[in-house]
Length: 137
Image (cartoon, rainbow, N blue to C red; front, side, top):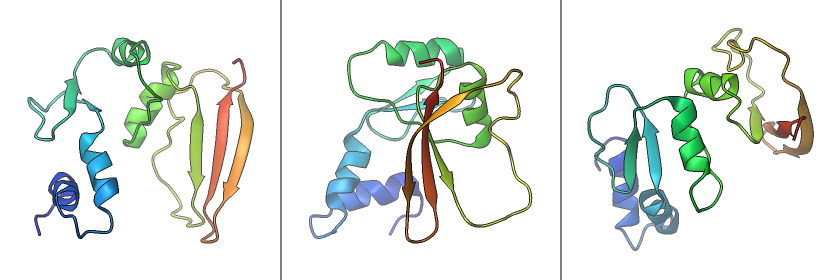
């Protein structure tokens, strides 16, 4: 089996006997945007690279036809989205594991950010998802 995120899901999507095939197809067929300053070309189908100003790139995506946008990325990427007020909904996963330190997604926030709690979703493993929206909406 090939190593890596992309080859894994491509293999799953191509295997009719894999119980995760439907999800694998969704992973491969869904349009994706990768924000990068270093990658020159994407190796994954249905993927475009966003190399411009983050605010312009996100607002261009928001103005396109289609469904909601979901982001995955590191603390630095999330912090940039928060700093530039580009997030419409927050889904914060609270994991009951204490590591003592880590990267804060709120480290670059220069003014108070009021959030309105929309929903709380607890899981039996102890993880809790907190769904917030900016209070000014």
